[in-house]
Length: 245
Image (cartoon, rainbow, N blue to C red):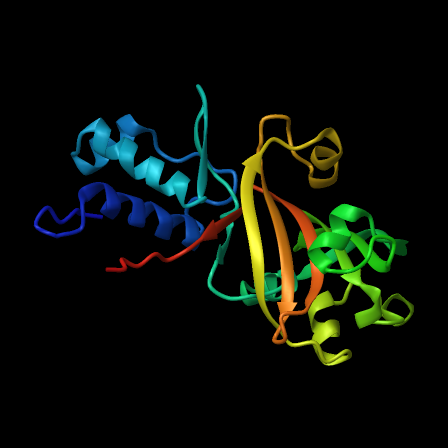
């Protein structure tokens, strides 16, 4: 590839795009080591700073990961979710051509503790559905979700459905007629607990995204309160911001 110095696209972006195309075409398969900064600067006749910027941009997009003292290696790209629409994990994964499945940890009826009753606007001790699942994409663990649903709004749901295979949102919409329209979601980053690391196959140095969401119907009725953790190395959130005068 020859860089175009007259293009409005910066040289490091041109190099990054060239490397991305080579990764996607299989020239550099999963686990392969990319050329070093020195090798890239020699190949493209650019400074090492420009080569470094290209590799850093590729890493920020989730295509590669740098290993100190060893180089930059191809990894599975992160699952990218845009924060524009209310979608389920199942929908997000299917839209990316992957197969979603779940490993159910708990599926049971429980009395609502105060910290769950508040978001769902029900009385403490009222019956809720507790659904704890590790969510997988192509058999790889991506997230751990602990959902709490007002059982009064979906009676008998656990008797008729297998949430290792089914989408909770789809069942709530199609069987119980709940139009899930909007959600209030809080996102933060933190280090995972030992239990979370084990469930998601994480090492001690990989952080997680922690999400807390309350999902509402078109009548502003809270239906679901969910606490989730997502692997930062496999999942990222994207939003579009526009200037408002």
